[in-house]
Length: 248
Image (cartoon, rainbow, N blue to C red; front, side, top):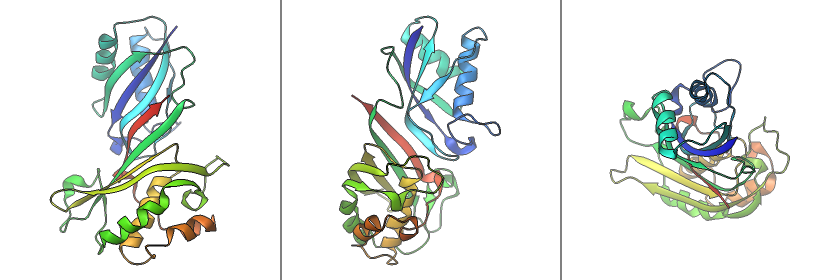
């Protein structure tokens, strides 16, 4: 068997998330169906760098799978890219060591979160950016971002339902960009890992800070509370993109 690593992108609008489940269309199911066709009807299981929820998008999701033969890489990439549904694209394929694992060997992930602040809002962005129609002071948001950097227990920014007990994570980058028209924000978070719905809760909290309902210096207190109720709401999923996954 040959182990392949692939980088895939997908529009999460019509998916019930990445991971295969009994009810609902998933990215894993669609990629595995394509690989099974390519493998003469024999099932092939894929493993992702992590799950994404319903409605969440990916630019650089990483998967690995074992295939019974080595094929030219561009031919393998092209076959996967053209035979998967149109809301999945395969950016690259490479052969990796037999012990490579897309999930367990991750050392860094980057997520983007897009927020539409245009008035009136654009209906064409409704599946690709969360909408925030309330007043925002972006200087307050920028003042709060550095307090997220470093190693912290992010219990306050983890939704209930996550199975991971260790809530300590390290964030290397927390930035805010605004497009030239001033109609859309992009939050950028880069770290060694993120908890269940953590990015969406971070954004929901930062938007509340920008709206003046949480103090700009309130992040340390929220972190020390280690209580989900101390943070802001969970932002809508359509603004979230898994942008990049890095390995050693």
